[in-house]
Length: 482
Image 1: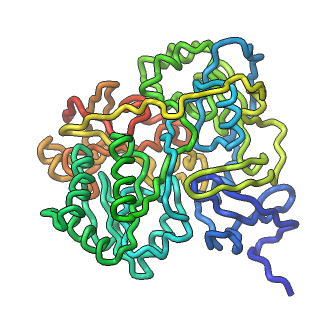
Image 2: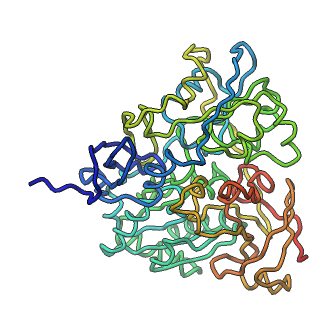
Image 3: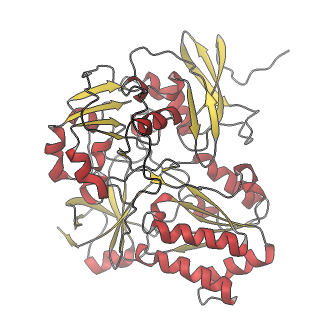
């Protein structure tokens, strides 16, 4: 007798890969009446999943069939002889990125370009003896959390550091809050501790001690921190690998394609005659540029009726990954998958940009600007709330309000308490938000989740573009209680 992995009444089983995050879990979808009634992780997944996260369930089972999904279209006839720029996001497939770069070197993204995102195969993470985690894997790379915890349960010494206590922090043996303005010094102090064999910082001292003693260490770091100074952080990781054989994995919003970031190329994007936006570019556009961009010839491909769709002249429904044949390459996976559902009323970049082989070369290492942080800093970071998760009935009620989080020390200096209003200003703009005091935030740091700008989608919230464009950390010019 064959036992199935679902107790639901289904007609057929379909197998696919989820690319809702970089982990790329293999799944089984149980289908009846051309709709998924249940989904689970595939037990033969090479990474040993056998289970499936709620985010993956939402992206496979819920969102493709959601009533909030963009259904109508307004498609232009694009003149390929005009100056065209392309924006891509983390859901783009390898085929779409290849097509974009074969057409033009003017490919923009909020993703971080990293040539070598790991020095270890992911399935070997649970065997590590020491792990320093500087990330929130629950946001982008959900199952990475499991691999790290697997290592902890096998006896690894788990260290967690950063500008916010994350889910992993509460499983860690040692934890440390780091004000963003001190992060580069923190890395430099780690290097010094290994060189001289000691540090005044007990957290760093123990990490160096265990790493040296057990000789099998790993650093997990997310894109947000690398964006502070890309060259400095990548050089640090390279140095620790070459000198002390400490492996690393870069997690988060990354790509191996040399995309140009938005902050340094905002004027270039504005000057293109046509912009093809695959994702939600408008969430990163400053307020004073929104009207200008909304008047441009911009075509947005989107899963949902988000801000970019509402402000674009042209728009098309975008295929979900279960609706297309695709290849996906990240730090965690290199997979190919076939569509398990058909949707003729949806598109990919391949339907917009023809394969003309127009571009023969592009900049291998696009300029990456550093961010000088001194004193009060705004951290627009990842909570457990996904940027599309709000559309899912599974995830609606995580937190219905957007807050600005500060610690008790900063709150006392401002003489402000929970629920009161705080106005905060950066070089790009200002906004007013309710305060929530939290012990999970370091001194001189204001944290805002970047996942609320498309809430449900009726509440716009405060977008990254208001404060930081596509940066995660940005200096605060002033702040005051209202």
